[in-house]
Length: 138
Image: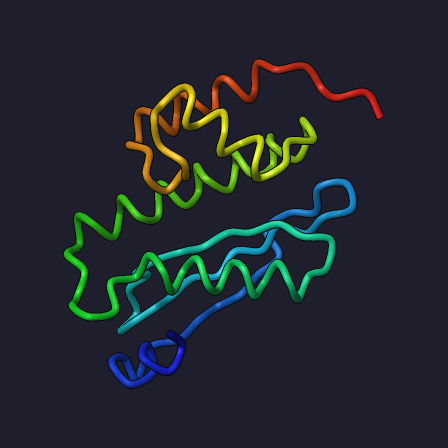
């Protein structure tokens, strides 16, 4: 997918940054910038910063529309939803939720198996639900 991106956007770049360190895990944000415009962002969390970066890069590349250009209104939505998804990552980690547990919860409540399939309203509702849950005792 990175090769496709490079061939379609030769002046495009990927910018990686550690956005936060949560306990022992790194939250990495990767932004895709083309002609000075941020087209997409991806966030991921892992105990190894390189793995978090790889996951964030894959997410960013997955949301940027590689076959055709993305409309400016879609870009803002992608960026906003990526930030919301990153916040849910932090809270799911705080609660000790596994990916499978999170998928099961999403299926039961929203009928969707991935956060990227939720609407902005559903994602905000899910984030508020996670924030309201007490910390897991370690």
